[in-house]
Structure formats: structure tokens, C-alpha cells
Image (cartoon, rainbow, N blue to C red; front, side, top):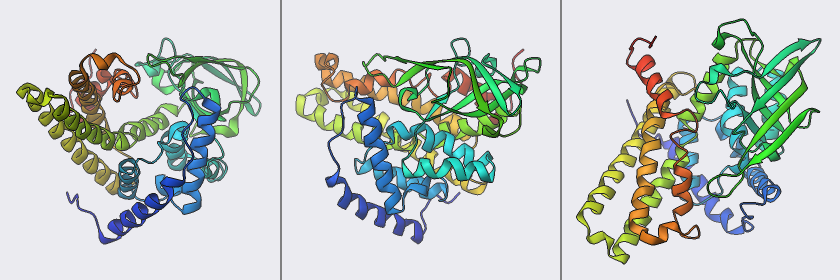
Length: 377
């Protein structure tokens, strides 16, 4: 498989790099992590700048390789992360682009690209996290609406979202994976209660969402009724396949900074630490190559990442935790100071073997869909 870039792709890289160098110095200061209205405005403002410059549609209308270059260059340049736009740009938007009707694409994709609307993800439930197929939030038809009752947890950015990509059970008697439907729920609808959840690092990026007979138009259903599990697999393939690209680049940069810090504070003299950092360098170089392979595969199969995304996510989750464990070794007692570099990164890394599908789930996917092993009974 050819992992090299074409002249056209390299030209895109050079043009983007020049635009970033000119634009980033003009950005306003980032708001406080606890100022979610401010963070929403900042993130949407950055998205609008990308839109006006002609880069916003790279997530859907460009090839997977162009998306890879875009994410690599913006991360290396220190550009703002997608932030509150994460679900819309990297999950819901690509899913609607792949599975939605022409009317749905026209309604929802342009506001995401322009930075007008924020989406959140309503998948996990208190008793249906890793076993997502066991979700119990109900939706039943009432004329032109679904009436939805239940609850969701770990709902990313719910407190500032305009829309929610929501999984509901519409076929209560069907096998659990065959009775699920994917809906786009307006977060301003009556009957929705949002309660933010504070993380270990002190931020509130997730929320509990309680739904009490919320009416969602049938026209907001993406895919057929009871076909939501298949649509969800499209969403999760994007989440596991390409959404972590920028974070791999960030980890490689952190690793370089970490080696520099170790040389300055004397921990570099420890041969065990040097071997550890060397192995991590090899890990992230291999993960980057795996990312390129996954993107090339997506290019050849219509733009949707395949099961290679699960292989990547499984190994990346562990490598990220190992990176920040090494950072704690370099920092020593400073690793307990939240104002120190990499400390918040270490805390957030603890969630990565759970978020976007637990490592146990990824191993099942690899075993069954890549290796062809039989399902457990």
C-alpha cells in the first residue's frame, strides 16, 4: 500500500501551513476551562475562521488523506482543538454525510461547518456503557413524532449543545441490536434536563441528560427505524478511526518535550527511562503509520474507516497512558501539581481505555471482525 503523498496533497499542506502561520497569532486568548459559554464561543469562532478560509469542509468533502494532512498540520501548528465542535465535526457530521438524506445533509451539515451549532453525543447510559446495545431509553411513535423517555450519561458538551445524536430503543421486543434508532434531538425541546458531571481534573465536559417524554420529529431520524445499530457503527468507526489523529501528533510533541525536560533535570541519566522514552517514540511512530494505513483503506472503500480503527484505538489508549506515566517519572513530585505541564494530560489519559469503546470491546471487535474468531457464548 502506497503511504506517500501526491503533489496535490503536498500543495494543500503547504497552503494550509502558510495560512496557519498568518492566522494563529491573531487569535484571542483562550477562555478559562470552566467558562463553557466562553469556550463554546471561542471554538465556534475558530470554526468560522476555517469556514471563511475554505478549510471547514475538509472533514467531509475532502479525501481521507486530505483530512489526515489537515489534522496533522493544525495540531503541529498549535491551532485550537475542535473543542465543543468535536461531536458535530468528527461524529455526527460524518455520520449524517454518510447516512442522512439530502434534506438532512442540507439542514445540519452547513451549520456545523460554519460554526453555528454544537452537537453532543447521547449514547451511553448508566447501565449501558460498554454494552451499548443494552440501552433502555425508549422512543415510541405518536403521529409525526417520537416520544422519548430515559436517561443518558457521559454526554459530551451537553450543557452548550444545540443538537444531540441520540440512540433510542424503538423495538422493545426485537433482539437488542435490532431495535435501536438514531435520532437528531434538539436540545431546546421541552422535557430535557442536563446535569453537568465534574471530571477528575475538575472540568465539566460531560453531563447526565434526563429525557421526560421529549418529542423528536420522525424527520430527524437518520437511517431506518430499528436500523440505528448499523448507523451507530458508522459513527463509531469515525470516532475510532480518524478522530484521534490530532492527538497522536500531540503525543509525539509531548514526547519530544518530555525528553528535553529529562535532559535538563537529570532524569535522562537513568538508562531505564531512556529506553522507555525510546520505546514510546517507536510506538507513536508505528501508530502514525497505522493511521496512514487506516486512512488509505478508507480512501479505497468509500471514506468510512474500517475495523483497523479498533486496532489503532486499542493500542493508542495504552500508549497514551504509558506516555503520561513516563511524564510523571520525569516530573517527580511535581506530577501532583495541576499547574505543571502534562499533569492534566495524565489525568485525562486514564479515561482513554474506556472512552470511545472500552479496551475489552475493542479486543472483541479485533477478535471477531479482524481475526475471524468465534463469538463467545
